[in-house]
Length: 591
Ligand SMILES: Cc1cc2nc3c(=O)[nH]c(=O)nc-3n(C[C@H](O)[C@H](O)[C@H](O)COP(=O)(O)OP(=O)(O)OC[C@H]3O[C@@H](n4cnc5c(N)ncnc54)[C@H](O)[C@@H]3O)c2cc1C
Image (cartoon, rainbow, N blue to C red; front, side, top):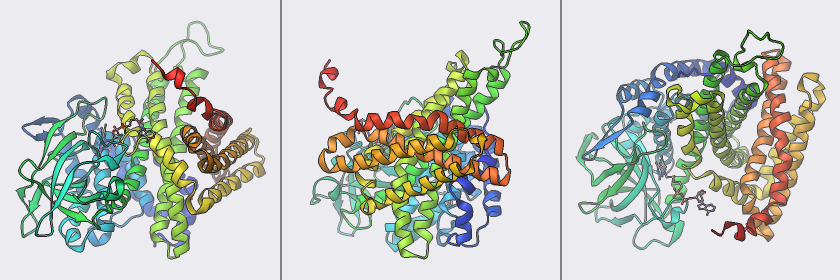
């Protein structure tokens, strides 16, 4: 099972799916050129294929282990992590002031896809460190930044994210971990967190935990949560790791997938309380954590894209080799590679189309984040922030949903061999499953899209995005190129469904919120297939214009429009008409 970075597809998606080329010309990304971007991606692709991908199997088979609170990663993981961080990949998009390379999020997004395509259990660690860097940089005091940021940026230390407790999963506001003020201005943290990714490990000499906890006089719910930095080792005067803090891993979980990533139960305060330092204001922890989570949500979406890409590569290679049956027109003595069979071709092109649509959505989200951060114009920054906020739930949930669908198809293409661990197809399917659950389940993403993102900027954020998608459809219709088949019409229908469903959602939020919530998941899917179809069509148009691999890109966009975007009508009906059946299904849910 190998992985190679799909550099031409990635580059095309960046340039023409996410519209990076015009953004480079606008100037808000400084003097960065497309050549620079492609040079970075080429190097990252090499690192992903040669250093990270070989970890995937051993991580799955041997996994991480714990003995007396000490967690050991699988053989070869520490050496690979060291090589990766010394290559400067951890700080690719971090501020130069703290030792990072200051590159845009969109470049980091493409690299994140590669780390996770090569080995998702590896990639999940750094993506949390990168989120921690963002939160500390945006909200931390100068003293904390000076003490911790540089080491986090270089990857010498890793960061973790501690939200979940047994009674507080999706409902973060239910958390009970306590923080008491100490006379010296620090805090003492006591409590237990579960499911903490890379909560303990042997990859770095220190681990910097970002922990949500509640002060004794805090208001209830999410308004009473504060964010604390809790290092595994407290720092000596010279900034190096010193005494062990009062935090430890109690155990690690046995999981369906990503065995290489240690998922820890963490205990704070066996000896009176772990020393913590508040990040930002007391009781404003959720806002700080959202800085971390928003980036992490996009990155988890990219895990879905990466693993889908890997499954597609593997299934396509297998389908070329495996011979069964005869293709139409073959003699009785011959047997065809299964890729010749229309049903297998359908599976393979579905895998490819879903992967590339999700990739385009993720990259577009990353570019919106860059514009929100870097544009010199305040109004433009605000509009871009709203765009990034709108697209983040799509990037996270659609990409991870298709990660599961595509890896499942990958198993199917392999037939019985897909179910046997030897081929590695089963591992990809197992690994992909978690990404729809962590960083806010996909159900929670759909609710976020409907209840928080649609109303953004008085509804103008979604309205202007629908306008942009409409312009792509008009351009498709205007080309009249027969190679695009029914694409223009099918995308137009999908967009009409999305527009009507959006109006219905906005109205339902006002008058019957449960109806809106019942339709949230199909609405997110409808939004994603309409947007994904348009972004692929935009790339097909560019390919036709440039005469650059137009055959493949047009075929893919056409397939998506005629076979996947057509689901929009059914999704619209499920949203608008099907909610009643969901809400009145009590009888069907009784045991
Ligand atoms: C391998 C792994 C790694 C993880 N890493 C971390 C980590 O590093 N840090 C961390 O803090 N956490 C981590 N988590 C925890 C993860 O984020 C949670 O599991 C996730 O947020 C869901 O919470 P839960 O498991 O309690 O499920 P629940 O919240 O109990 O949800 C169960 C189901 O109910 C649905 N649901 C819940 N509430 C609502 C609602 N209000 N409306 C509609 N549907 C709802 C959910 O969508 C889901 O389908 C990890 C988990 C795993 C398995």
